Figure 1 (cartoon, rainbow, N blue to C red):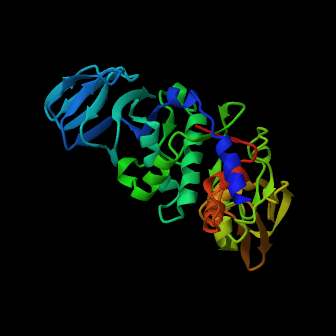
Figure 2 (tube, rainbow, N blue to C red; figure 1 turned 60 degrees about the horizontal axis):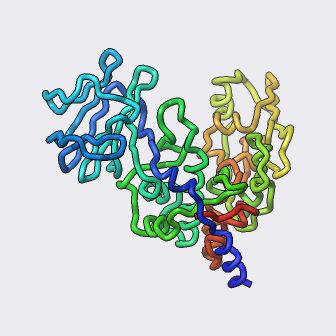
Length: 367
């Protein structure tokens, strides 16, 4: 049966022109600033939009500064440009890695946004993924789960390429996109996972799918429509036996709870917290807080107030006594791929094709 599945999976790896057209990405590195400093072990050079070398700049450190709406490039006291173009007309290159807060492959350019500078890493998709996968799923996990993450991250990048187009880049280096720390975070095992799945991504109707992923579903995958809206046939509620044992507990004294909640919802006393509404996966949508005042609060907002690393999901029960105790399952929104589940499936000997079909049913693995 396993051999038959693999044969069927291979049939659905079909070639696509879309991948080649989306080969390079512009990634915003860090926060916007008025001054950005780049260094390299070898001299910087200037390249054009076709990545042809124009000039060797003869320096190993460059600072970019926004002055009166123009980008000044300097190296020490030496002025390299008093009006360096934005929009990627010219890029900075080096034969070594370029260092900002980490070391990066590819090229750097600058964009002006809200009177500040953005450092943009212009990089090939496969090289970008090498700096992503180990941050999203640690290299210590089984290879098939790492391959699953590589394909999911590649698909996510392709489907979100225009997310920040108005700001002048494609993705950020944070969890608002995917965590990317450049060459500094690469590991030979996750690089192998990227290389061995090169160019593979998931599609439906010949387009990259919305490849949502999170740490753990807690035993039941949430329906994307109920979490964010948007109806996707491959992001529906589903039992997930591979993630069912991820559990957590959050205990708070009434005083601590009141202190946290009162920053937005003033309270002096609390008697009980009631769950008002849940979705089809059992995740809490709304709670009622009864005390000297009564508040109805969205569960997502309550999680944000209490801290999303402590209240790990909205899949929980709650008890109010001397302490307020939340007992929950899962970590994150619960939509799409559960990384914890993918790891467990890989430990059971399942390969990446089967893992992807479990979490994104009906999609096509494309290359």
